[in-house]
Image 1 (cartoon, helix red, strand yellow):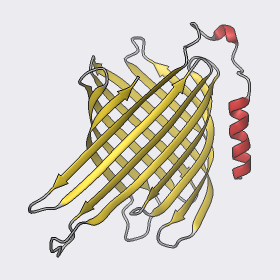
Image 2 (image 1 turned 60 degrees about the horizontal axis):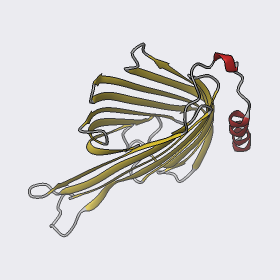
Image 3 (image 1 turned 180 degrees about the vertical axis):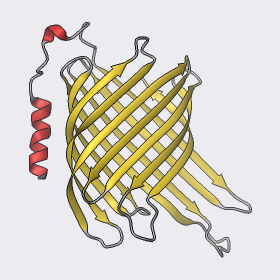
Image 4 (image 1 turned 120 degrees about the horizontal axis):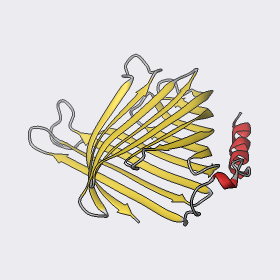
Length: 253
């Protein structure tokens, strides 16, 4: 199955555009790299003792034919446990994620894509999850370009290690992604990304909702709520995890 999907990714990305060149509006876009990194740190001492660090970084490239994106994210937290005598903090969260997408445009708004996602989490139902997928995407813009909505869908293969049993699961999945951006004011954006990977072994859902307020052309503050869901978890684990953050964002142009 993995060999078939790998071949499908290569074919999807290497195939010539099926769109009529006359149907593509405007001049060719100049190749462009853009990116943004965000970081949040919190520390508490006194009656409660904890410290946490979370960060994200994304880099994208786009020209008139291709668009690529890479992203990494991490979360690490330590906190005092019941009966702690002040000698130290215990690890309470340790997670990192990696994502890679590559897409070939067929029109200004439609594209075929290949995507890879990997995550490792020491405190989740699955020690690690890896998904390879292909699909079709389409971007919708409002008349004033203040609202952008991208939708992607396609098949894939998922492998994961069950944290409780140590068994490696492998199954076919359907992947769907919804990316929504709304420019509320000149310096304030509402963003939301919903990812769904559903198969016979597990359904994974991650939703990232954020409000970004720009302080200048490069620096912004971002308040965000992340919700993660796994349908198949052991009895002593919860299906849903949430993470609330307030981060400093730096944009690369």
